[in-house]
Amino acid sequence: MVKKEKRKKAHLIGICGAGMSALAVLLKESGSKVTGSDNGFYEPVASYLKKNKIYFNKNYSAKNIPRNTDIIVIGKHAELVPSKNEEVKKAFALKKLGVEIKSLPEMLAQLSEGKNNLVVAGSFGKSTCTALLSWCLSKAKNDPSYFIGAVPINFGKSSHIGSGKEFVLEGDEYPSSNWDNTSKFLHFNPHSVLLVSAEHDHINIFPTEKSYKKPYKKLVAKIPKKGLLVYSTEGKNNIELVKQAKCRTVSYSLNDKKSDWYAQNIKYGMQTSFDLMHGGKKVATIKTKLLGNHNVENIIGVGALLLESKVIVVKDFTKAVASFSGIKRRIELLSAQAGKNPKSLFPVYEGFGSSYEKAKVIFDALKLHFPKKRIVAIFEPHTFSWRNRGALKWYKTIFDGVGVVILLPPPLHGKDTHNQLSFDEIYKEVKKRVPVHKATTEKEALIILKKIVKQGDIVALVSSGSLLGLSKSVPRMFSEKLALL
Figure 1 (spheres, rainbow, N blue to C red):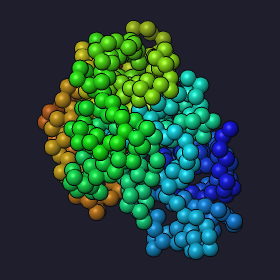
Figure 2: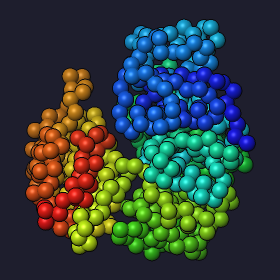
Figure 3: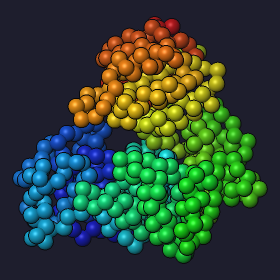
Figure 4: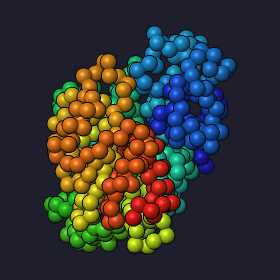
């Protein structure tokens, strides 16, 4: 039986974030009546909430909080503090009257109480690993609960309350709320942890590597003796972190035979295949739609956790991996066929390139799988990381091996409070190393793309922003018009 949440009325302030909207669905599935508010609603969150029949206000106001609300969950946005937000101010006033105020991770901890919690933590690949763990358990008919920080293509939703024993949680070292600096994943009670590569990140929060590793050490130490820690040996910090474990530990890597689990005979193309190895013996041949060595490593880590835990068998694991389509915007194949001509193949991929490392993984994967094809990159420097003046050096190498770039303008928000690069500065730096075209609108980008694309090219859309709507219009252009050939 699914455990029903006792509270009947929950209100989420800052509901339009990926995590908060996923939490809203969890609360509804657990039996609560859910409402929420935010100061802006964008796709796909707005449609996602409407589809799940969750009512929300498109602004902040003290009047938004329904009468007799039992619990209020407040997001992490900087503006969600009593001094700046009247709705948050009222929430804390209601706290004095007995209404519970919680952060997102505190609420997740409560919802996952009594479950066999599988926590995925680390700097890269968390969403993919969390989604794959959940998919494998689902395909094996375990009906797990899950919370994923992005939208998996197979499920079409990022959270679910299941009837099974397992609760798969994407962990995050980022602070829990504006009043609680505890790392989010430290609110969870893990039975097992999958630790992917933990590299120094969120420098504004963790200024030193030592400060970054501190919450990870606490997480590893929380795993009970009967639990399991599966860790990547590719992460330079992981070897130190694993020393905190009281439980059994299992290592994995891409192809290091010294690890407990690794890969051999990796083959690349429109799909990937490899032999999954354990203790020097072949366990299975794995076939996957996912591209890149990083995803091979992700699959190995997930397999190690599931098979070492004996929650599924090898046959079910290989079938689930073969049918797993990945995460939206994580080297997602948007379009492969241009028109009706079978010879006119234009694969269009979209990748979440919020940092240098994440963008590099996208380009490296495409170069690895398609070494003879030209990559046409449509790039939007959306995050503060890409727009910061200190990031100018990134543009010297990020497009190595890329054939041509269509550069989109950086957003203007925060330009007065951050030392940001201008569109022209970024363009001039990129131009020194690779052919580049500037496009300021969706229409302009499409016109340029039509002129420069050649048969046999691969198009890569890379950003953490909206890409001016090109993730929809580029595949549509290739499917409707063959005239460009």
